[in-house]
Image 1 (cartoon, rainbow, N blue to C red):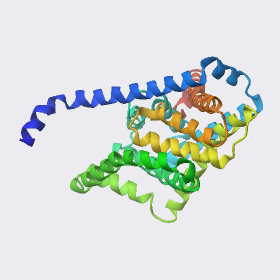
Image 2 (tube, one colour):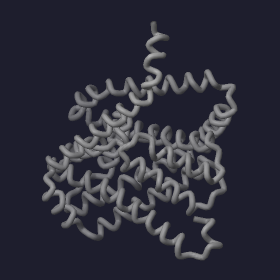
Image 3 (tube, rainbow, N blue to C red):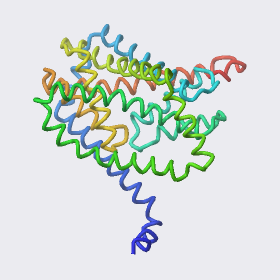
Image 4 (cartoon, one colour):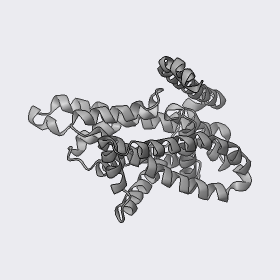
Length: 317
């Protein structure tokens, strides 16, 4: 009976997957719309126009350092000899498609495809992307647990209620591990496991974790300086909790790029930290917009540079 059902559903597998993706994307857009509506568009615009230029510049500068550090970590994971600026360009495409796209996995697909054009093995690229995600989850999970315990009286019931959403994520991890074990004889899987395992050997694992911590702190500094730019104050540790909690819960929501979900969680933590709800939402949404716009500006500058510099130097970009 089960085999017959699988045979019947097989032709519709892709359509079901696409339908789920569309539903998840729409969910994210609805949450985003509700956040904008709650904050008020005029209030959102007014908050942005009255940001302190100095703190805004510092926040953008930290975000650029975050992107550079992220590229350095990815280069370290891949262990490839591609020029840094060219890899930076590829990394930014992955960020923008993952951060702003309504299609799940588009950023990962872009990285794999662009690196394949640069003659990098797919197994090595996918293992490196997996390492990025694993180390991010390890750091974010650690911070999330520490602060969840610290603020359990305030958010305990909500965290406990959200814990059931961990079940699908755990199931996916179990299926992936089972798949790796079952197909361990495959040359692709062997290459993947070999490259993946190398990043967890000491002292390389400690080094990777320190780089990951730096990436998260630099990313959190964008929101920290945005809060200061409004004339408010929230400690960096609370901002770090907001960003890591948003990442963890956004990841298990299966909404592409955590669209709407991450923003709602970040705003909720900022509100708990003392900001008015409208201000917390405004800062969170401005944080997303500035993050996306900064990446777009850098990509535009790199593409303009390709057209202006001599042809002999273009192979480095």
